[in-house]
Length: 226
Image (cartoon, rainbow, N blue to C red; front, top):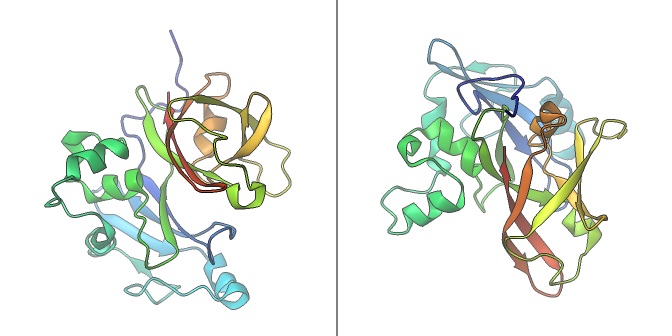
């Protein structure tokens, strides 16, 4: 029977609030959103957010301007304004794409982590700190494609990719390189990569789910399964 280290009954109880300057830019966690044992949701910036503001022009989230404050009020409701409305006629297809469990679709914290809270109006992402639990499944995106400039047709929907851990990577000790037939095709998105290191020899399965391409591959979403 497959063993799952660091077992937890929940997929995640922490979400990294991540920012990057633009497409192709380096992703940096500027804070975290935590579900506390008492049921409260707490958001706070990391001290490094101040340095990022000075070095790269990082702008705080509009409703959370104080980089030194801990927010524990209606933070999930505010961040939840990024979520797709349940009234959309295609909401079930949207949830299916993002690997959302239907019985948790009313949980805004869960939805933020599963869908990454992506919107076209800013450069924030909400990346769950996934734990290795039985039945774990989530969607992530291949990083590094803008640098590689892979030609159209490199990926096919439904095909499986391989990966290698890179604990000696000087830029990110939790880096996970993606491979197709031994060829590098990108990396697991930063902060989603931790669960691959937790898995150790219990290999995770990677399946291509969606591709955005014209002359070159622009975006690829892959399903991660335990």
